[in-house]
Image (cartoon, rainbow over all chains, first blue to last red; front, side, top):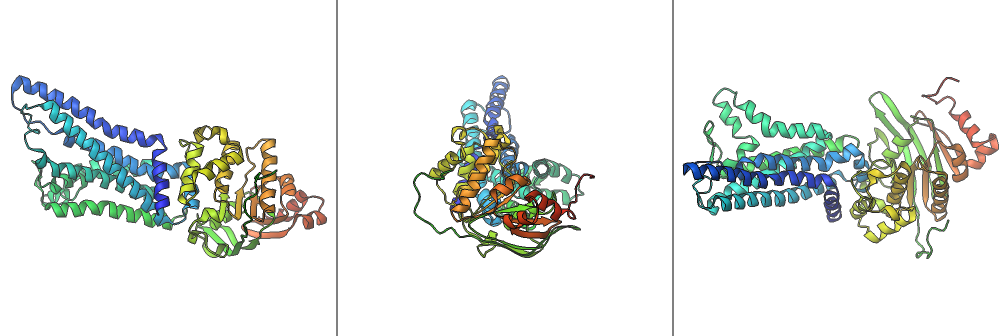
Length: 254
Length: 254
């Protein structure tokens, strides 16, 4: 297992797409700075305002970019045929999938938290005592939200690994991630009440505020799930995706 | 060709490939139909058959890439997928283009080597051996087919295995490369290794192989030494043509 982990780590580091994906996620820092400069200028004109925190507003960018990293770790092997070379070297499917998941899990967790913290820090520094709404609580109060956000990125990247193994095509797997992240939450709001709220509380993007014990949104109201339950649901996503991915990896010929 | 200047301590290289009633069905088509034969050490075994005869599928079954519908393929008495460090027992080149084009030759090989606990020194060694040391840091995507074949052969040699399997390794190689492969195959066999080599080039096969296995429509047609075949027919090519006359599925009108 250790040998396969070190191989997967080198695989991740030795292709450009990894740096493109992390670079795209890191755009969040730049966007966060631009956003804060903009709302800071507005605040200088009008005084107090209530702006969204950039590390929350741009979270979907981090989630999407690093989910693509998770997808590519396996679908790029199918696209190039490398997977057959890999499976000849590592014939045990479970070892291979676990190693890929382990490396993607670690890499995305570190990258996501670094990006989110950097966005957080730069925006608070730029805000510098202005009343922008998002910068008026202490870091310790924001910490649950930050941790939940970072965790959601890793969970989604692992969902990407599982879906990649199950679907094998980059486009197909990325479409599924997009559906999970952006399409489903939109569709669910059209369900008849109270099902719209009930289902919405289980969707991946909505789990982040619930884990942090915050309001879901003005429309959906407070989340139905206590933080621990939201965390359990979040963990269920990658577990189910990886289980399906493993099943398909074993069942189908390479 | 001298494979190594300083001979390593003698090592018993004993490897056997055994097929027992190996069968693979894809839907209604039978790719491999009750195939049984043994490949033994000490000589190059040529694996011949018309297009679609099941040669590549048989190799994929041996390597555990595809699961057999029935029967089994064993290497050294065990199923390939149960080997802990398979590259140390079997080296295979199935499809030279099954590599990630974005990775350098060195990193590609090191990724594979690490999975089986093989160090970077050995990677440098095989790169030298196949003549790619000069382009080790170049991206594989820019390689010609011949260079990719050399890279694939380097990967097969990484674990210094007792069994080697090559599917059409001379495709895309220049005359110098063809001769190099021929000498390499023969010297690997002379070292006591088991070499299974598929090719459509009869003249090449006559020069390289000592034993021949001919398949057609997934079934065994003949298993003989080259000497036996050339004694009964004017040439190996004539023997092949006569024996596979009924098995050509995708032939032009004659």
